[in-house]
Length: 276
Image 1: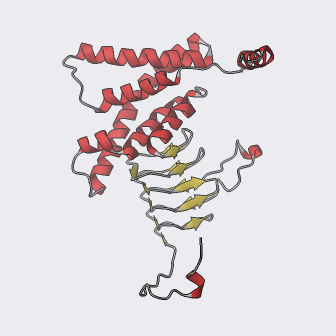
Image 2: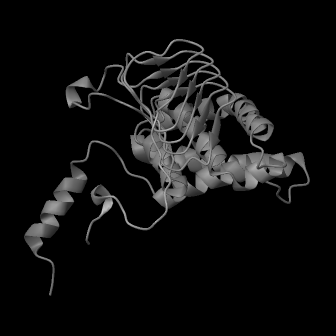
Image 3: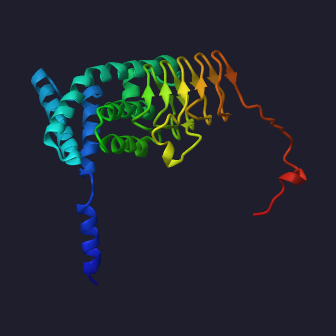
């Protein structure tokens, strides 16, 4: 059975009326992984010329992605050049991120282990390159790049967030960092942390919706911190499973107190009996 001509025309009109260009997502994934390999993983590269060639390859891919998305060759050339001019600083910051993990995570023994296997570091890498494209006002591509890391690691960092140096994600699964979040230096996040918005109305899109996290803050697993006017003061420790929508002074310890009882597993209290 053939697809109807009316439906074919409708889909074609929709494609032709799109205000943005599209690009090959597999090439985007190739750019992200190839650049990571060049920067951090051992490759059989023996000369500076070979390394130059590898960089030229990923430059060509990025140029094509931006050109297809923007449909503007001049813009694509300018933004590709700007990205690679910024890359040395991005690389230096990522090395500081990796060194922070090595210093504070007792489960790791080497920088190589982090670069090869840590999803938190990979998500941070993807955030830092997508954020650079975001501040260059490249459309669509930074969001698609960030969602690639989300699909690979379970860590969702919007490229519009501002994150300082020595950033440390431990475990990481389920972390969400919203678009207008601002994070200082030497901040550590554990799995399941949400830095989100109190109000998700579309008319608030251009407002500060997500919290501020100052320097040297640790946020443990399952904590939820919401609101554009919410600031976690420097040197604070946020315990697991807390819900915060107000400012926390510097040097604070915030924790959720729960009661746990242990008894034999004989007759259960009536309130715990149930039938499925």
